[in-house]
Length: 550
Ligand code: CA
Image (cartoon, rainbow, N blue to C red):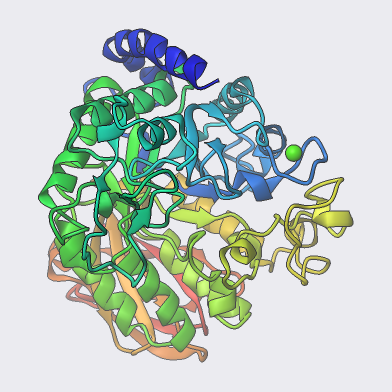
């Protein structure tokens, strides 16, 4: 069994490297790069991405485990391909949490990088998903886990059992247990079950770290990336746990070696598959630390600092954290290369953090979806699904309807649904214009039809109220002012001082463009000197947008 996998890997090495140099670029053009002649427009500078845990999204075969065929059947919910229709979410991208063969329910310990886990379906099911997604204008990115393999992966098993194995140097070994300070109090050196020695695995013994000081490791993982882009037709990757790729003595994160490896991944993927996208998980909220991952490593990174601050502003009603975080991100990171989100599969769900308050969830979404970069929505967030740790209960089955198992499965769901599923589900919110689901749909469609909101610059304004936030998104064609109230009371005479860059490009006429029907704004006057805007009022947790016309 092990032998046949390795033989396949060698065969792919030839096939894939040939394709990677030539054909990859061709397939990327059809699925990625669009725009006027001579203008390279990256697809990921437009739209919103939807994070899917396949195991929990939709189960087609009734075994209680979500699968690729189930997801494919539900693509119209994510985007039905009709830009004028607001009956779907309108996301132009999906990120699938790991779908490679794995020993665990979550999939972050991979045993075979070249095949879909049979619980999720076949490799052909994945290709069909991609075809159906592309038909609707949805790009598909997959989780890529370069830091470690499963301890059950044939590479590790070979290295573990045979000190002469060619894979021995693909992992890190020590005859004595090193004194190694860990990142969060965990053991990072694990006792070999075979002989008197230890191996390194940052997260746990079931996930031994790959050793990038061995050049063959990077070659193999580049081959894996090429395989998913070319043979599987994926549009890019979410890179898992990027700070930890290379260790340097007692420094386990953010090493120079890690940056070098990411640079090689990013540069190779960009040059060989220019229509693809790479985004990294660097979960430290510090802008200064994230800044070290630019300018030339991956295309973009999740802005954990902005995400935490957005949720905090919605929770407390004070905009201070949000204003500071977007100011810092805008000043520190390259434009359009940081992604907003609220929470992901590793964090308590935002509705739980907000104490079940749908109005707070509404303003958090309004803020997050108007920021630059490719925003990410975690499946179920748009209907206000709840969940706290442990991880399984923030990754529960999608609540589609009040049918058995929430419409997720005709069998027994792999994990219990949240207790609120009978009342809180897609079907219940679908036709309710006041629902959170329709709020997300409206916001995403609003973003989709205004390129200033996708790819425009960000200029942060100041407001007259501690609960307020305002900023301007603009391209050469359009200037849009966004106003937000994180507070739980309406604010009258809401003043917005435009940044000097925006004010200096005026004078403007102001025109209402969009308002949250559940809580928008009244009035909207621009001062004679063109430097400030006054709203008669902005509703509690309100959101509105204006066009500034020169
Ligand atoms: Ca299934």
